[in-house]
Image 1 (cartoon, rainbow, N blue to C red):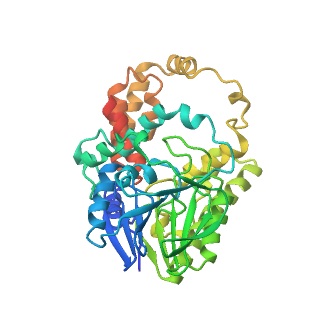
Image 2 (image 1 turned 90 degrees about the vertical axis):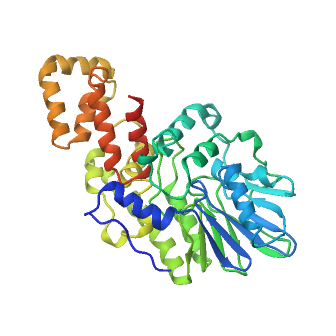
Length: 420
């Protein structure tokens, strides 16, 4: 399977996203062989059906019952065998949300435990994180602002409303790597922490296929995403990618985008993906140790041309966000500047700046920035008095969103603009 990097510098952000969505985010069914069917991008999530002697093993259950019903209907076109086993590659809405659709036939649900105690914040922050998900998925935006990918707006909105209480809970928890046979299918469950600490890879040795879940999903990863998440340990993530690489798979089945096939292409993909993450990590740490500021590191650390692959495009996460996450993980919130150790509240400091600048000059500069296309500058100046500059802030957010080539950033900016 040959891929190419889409969207050169001559394209605007929206067109880059449209091209990427058409090639890699479209809802599609891939028949890998007679026994493996991959359902890609059903509501920003994917699943894989493995057909056994008398039943089907479903790896992940997509993000909602609406999409799971679609999967079940399509699966029936290929086999009349029932889904008896579900394996979750991680414990997330994207993997569990549609599981209840198969409750009438499922006999076993397998999940992986964490090596560490889950943080209390995982359950105490659901409301704020759900709200941010609404922003980053674009649920409240007009259709004309949405990048088309084959999923209708109503499908996505309905999928978000699915209750967690309906999900099928694991009946078997995996703590360590293990191998087993399920209905004639030989498989291994391997702990491969990456985006989440409990991620597992389902390895099918006879098929040379690896269902890796969110270990790899075909875009530059979203480190400490705007919805809020734990830090993703880069070294461990790279180790997991290389562990799967060393299995020499011929089929790579990811959580999003499209499967990768062919031993050499799969090997290169996993190796390059790991090397890219490691590159950003090492150069960020070196910059910190050399005494550079966060802004200086962000300005100096970029991926070299050798990493310009379709699966490392910043369509979901940004290199800058990864650098910020690494800084916070290793240095905490303090920048090292004495003035930021016990700073004034933003409101007080902003009042002082406004008194120095004056509203007349500030208004002129905001309008000039908007006219010159300096939308980020305009946005930050608006924050000195967001109530007074509400309209200008909305214009800044709207332009930043429409020009972004990163999907979550686009939707977040446009959603916050719509609020105003």
